Amino acid sequence: MSFALTVGSSTTTEEVFWSATFFLLGLVVGSFLNVCICRLPLNKSIVSPPSSCPHCGKFIRWYDNIPLISYLMLGGKCRACGSPISPIYPIVEALTGFIFGLFFYRFAVKAGQPPSVYFAYIALSAALIVSSFVDLEFYVVPNEITHWGTALGPLYTLLFPSLHPSADPLRGLSLIGNDRLDAVLASLTGILAGGGIVLLTALLGGLVFRKEVMGMGDVKLMAMVGGVVGWKLSIIIYFLAPFFALVGAIPLLLSGKGRRLPYAPFLSVATLVALPLQTSLIKFLDSRLFILSEVVKALF
Image (cartoon, rainbow, N blue to C red; front, side, top):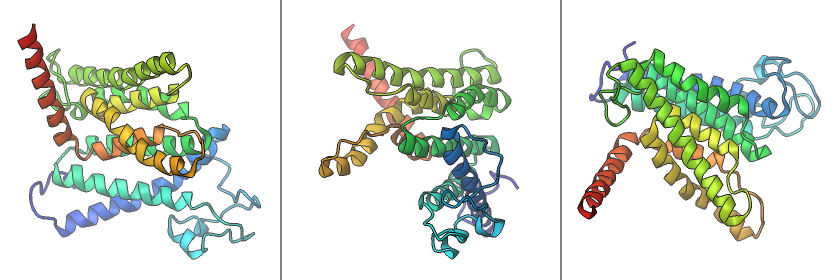
C-alpha cells in the first residue's frame, strides 16, 4: 500500500477500506490502552495477569473482551457477577479507533505524508489518551509514558527524519545541513519549547499565587508532545489548551464544586485538534511572528 497513492483525488473505495482498517486497529489498541490506564497508576504489570472484573475478580474470556462489541452485547455488565462495567472502557476504545482512522485519512490519504509521520502521530495520540485518563482519575501523569515518549522522540526522528523535514519550514529546521541531524535538532527544540513554556508558567504561577498552578507532569507531557510536533505547534498547543480548559471548568463553576481540574487532558485535546490543522495554524503563527519582527525592527 502506498500512503501517497491518490493524494488530492476524490475518496476511493481503497482509501475508505484502509481508513476503516486502521479504525479497527485503533479499537484493538484502545483495549490495550484501557489496561495501561487501569494498571500503570497502581504500578502493576500491563502484560500479566489477564484482564479480570474489578468487582468479582473473574478473568474475562476473549469473547467478552472484544472492543466495543462485548460491552454492547453484555449490556455494560460483567457476565459473572452482573456488576456494571465502567463506560470509560468503550469510550477509550472508540476514541482511539476514531483517531487512528481519522489521522490515516487526513495524513496518509489527503496529505500524502509518509508512514513514519502517521505512526508517530498515532503513537503520540495513544500516549496522550493514557496520560489524560490517568490524570482525570488519579491527578498524575504517568512517568512511564512521558519519560519514554520524550526520549523516543529524537531517536525516532533520527531514524525517520521525515517527521521534521528540514526542507519544510513549517515542521523542520535547516541549520546544520544534514537532514537527519537537522530533524533531531528540530525534535530537541520542540522538547525544550513544549516543556520549557509550561515549566516557565508553573514557576511564575507559583510565585504569583503562592501555590502550585501546574505540575511537573504537565511539563513532561508537553516536552513529549514537542519532540513529535516541533516547537511551533507546541507553542500553538500551549495557547489553545486554556480554551478547552475553560469549557471543562464551566460545569464545575456552575455546580459550585471546588474539584481540582487536571490539565493534561486539555493539553492532549489541544494537541489532537491541532495536529490535523497544523499547516493552517503554523502559517497563522508565522504571519504573526513576521508582523512582530517588523514592529521590533521599526522600533529599534
